[in-house]
Each structure stands twice: as structure tokens, then as C-alpha cells.
Length: 422
Image (cartoon, rainbow, N blue to C red; front, side, top):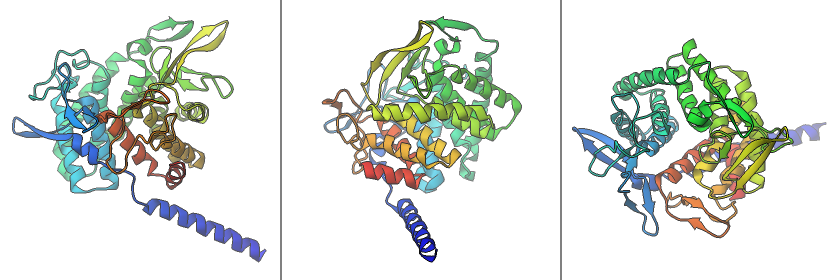
């Protein structure tokens, strides 16, 4: 009996030391390349922080696009989310200043109609004509919404003025979102599947970004109207979940209409955040169904890029299964969801899964390529086949990888698994 107790105590001590060691081990986060992409500009005597979209091998010079521009809300907003999270764990002046300048850029891109332009040219002129830059209800407006909601959750008196302006913009956009997503909604049929027309007009990929912003806004301004809107959006995502534990696509949420694509597959992550914060238990249940069944299958199969489902002979059939390209933005949402599941359930299996998924960045992928260089901070833009990869290193890849590692480092177990796979 004494020997058994001693062994149990020894085991607990060893585990405890391992967790402390993981927490105290050097961070894998290297912002050097993100800082290379970062550039401050001055508009009307106000400093704005921008992120260059493109940086190409072999010398990784910053390049612009004649049609789009050199920077965009899509990337600046995600960088703002990263620095807000980084400031929470590392409240240093450098991170705070990035939060200020990046926030000002996002808010400066707001149009008179309450939505946001996306691109800016090197001469500091806003691109108002490109189809992916018009001030409209689209990804870049939702990312601005999400990022500004993160800004408003930072506790620092130096941000008070920016946060008040951000709250005004968020409030205005929330009213627009409420009008866009009125019920009862129209139903459409696609390949034998019945779904909300929202899935055609926006897709659950866009709706998940809105839901992330709404969840943060509820923390800022808790009221039943916001919760009701979030519940409505979450239920539309749940309605496009197909398959189960035994049948492909194993509980995956479709991204747009009847199509699943890896990039931006943040449905489970958004449902977990909303379900936990707003106390909507079934959101967590549905999210865990995808994480428990679809994510491990993706990992075991070397990941996917896209597929679509349709109803044939009264059963869901899968078509067009593609493995490439594989990009950071296709891996990061699964990591964020897995870590969120770990924090909500306290189950180590989700931390293990997050570490395994994160190993994609460190060579555990079909091309056996180290995608994230911890020395330079560069992240390659994608894997095109088992023998070909894109060694440019733009903003999206860089930021999505950093968000992934940032999340993994909130769990000693996830870090341990990641390092075992490296």
C-alpha cells in the first residue's frame, strides 16, 4: 500500500513537473516576419498600422498588386486579433502600440454606409472599385467587426478613446447584421439538400466570423437582442452539418451552400465560443461532433482542401474530394476549435488533437515540408502536392500560423504533443 501511494505521488510529481516545464519552455511564436510585413503610415496626421499582403521568395521583398493594393482589412484585422491576444498574455508596450495603430487602420476603412472597404493602395488611397474591396456585407466587413470587438475587450485605459469609437462602429454594424438576417428566412434546395438562403448569400464561413464578433459584443453589451441574433446565426450553421460518427463527412459543417472548404472553416470554433459565452449548450454539442469525428479523420488522411455533398437515393453522398492546396488558413480554424474544446471540456484529448493538427506547420504533412520557420518567423503560403509547395510568405499564412501557435501554447499538453511530432 505504501509503495503504491509512493508511486502515485511520484507519477503526479513527474506530471506536474512536465506541465510546469511546458509552460516555461521558450515560446514558438516568432513575430519577426509579421513585423517585416508591418508598416506604419500617416493619414491626416494619424498613425495607421498596415500589413503588406504579399511577400515573395527568395528574398521576401514586399510587393503590391496593381488591382488590389498592398494592404487590406482582411489581414490587418486578423493581425489585430493576434496582437490583442498577445497583449493579454504579454502586456508590453510594443503589443499595445500595434493594437492602437492597427485599430485605427480598420476604423479608417469604414464607409458612409457602415460597411468597410478592404484594400488600400501604396499611395494611401482606398480601393473603392475592386469587387473584393467594395463596402459591402462580406468577409472584410465581418473581420473588421470581429477584430474591433476584440479591441473592446482589452483592459487598458490608453485604449478608452479607441474603444468608444469602435463600440459605435460595432453597434451600427450590429443593426445592419440584424436587418440582413431576418426570420422567417427563405429556404432553397441545392443538390437535393434544403437549407437557408443565407448559405447561398453568405455561407456559414462568413456567418461564423459574424458569430465570433457577436459573441464578443455580447460580453461588452449583454442583452437578449444580441443573444437572440447570435442564436439565430448559430442555428443556421448547425443546419448544414452532415454525416455522423460512422458516415462521411463525419459531422462537418458545410462552408458555402453544399460545399466544404478548408480555408476559414471556423464554424465549430464560433459555435463553441458562442455556446459557452451565451450558455447555448447544443451549440457546444454540435461543434464537438465535428471536432470528435471529422477533425481526426482529416488529420489521419493528410488533410483535405474541398469537397461537396448531395442527396442521392435518400442518402448523403460526397463528391469532388480534393487534397490541395493546403494552406495555413485551412489548418488554423481546426486548431482554434480544438483548443477551445479543451478549455471548455477540460478533456486532454482535445489538447492532443490540437498538438497533432499543429504539427502540420512543422513538417508533419504530405510534403514533409517545414511550413513555419521559428528562426525567421516565415510561413510558406501553401502545399500544392506531395512534391510541390509555395515558398512565398504572405500575411495570411503568417498570421494564421501565429494564431495557431498562440492557441496551442495555452495548453501544456498541446505543446507537448506538438513538440513530440516536430
